[in-house]
Amino acid sequence: MEEIVKKFQSKFRKVREEMNKWNELQSCLISQFRNASHIVERLQVLQNSNNYGVLNCVSGTRDALLEKQFESFRNILVSMRKTLEEFHCIVLSLDKIHHDSRQLVKGSYSHLTMKQLQQQVGIKPTLIYCLDSLIFIHEIYNSEYLLKSSLISALSEMALNPRYENTNAIV
Image 1 (cartoon, rainbow, N blue to C red):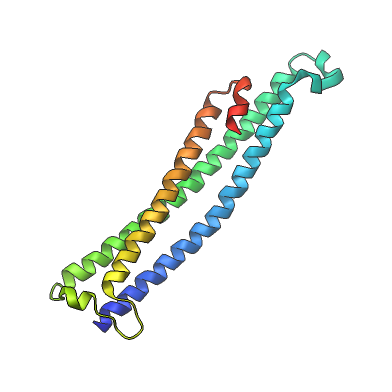
Image 2: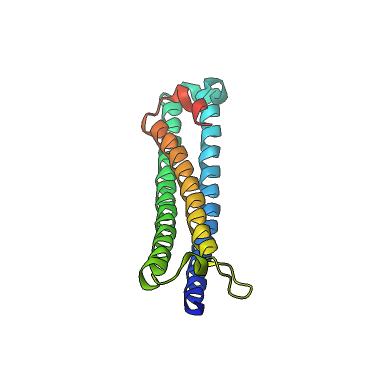
């Protein structure tokens, strides 16, 4: 029993490492989103021809500036998608840790009874609690990943169909 508990401690150390990576990626994604938001704000200003003053007499200035901003916006979205892929790798890793833990309990230690799975070793949590916690952690991070994915997909969709009059919808 003590051996299983040590293996679970190792699994939870891996989970903690993945959660730390998640936090670093979260900071990166927030920065990327902030940069994308600034571009959207600029797009709203650039759409108004009254903001160009004497540059209105230079043909194509407005469209060139808008196109450059959309290009920058698309580049940020590519970076956001790469960050999202890293989030997905963490979700897959958490799923694997949970799956491996279940296999550990089922396979190698199939002789364990439900009572033993619910037994507490010292101040350490029960094996059932550990398994439940691993699935809970995976579900939380997977749900957050799906939310981030849908938001970035919506932003990407708007960037792929650049209609200058629709930039208000991006914000």
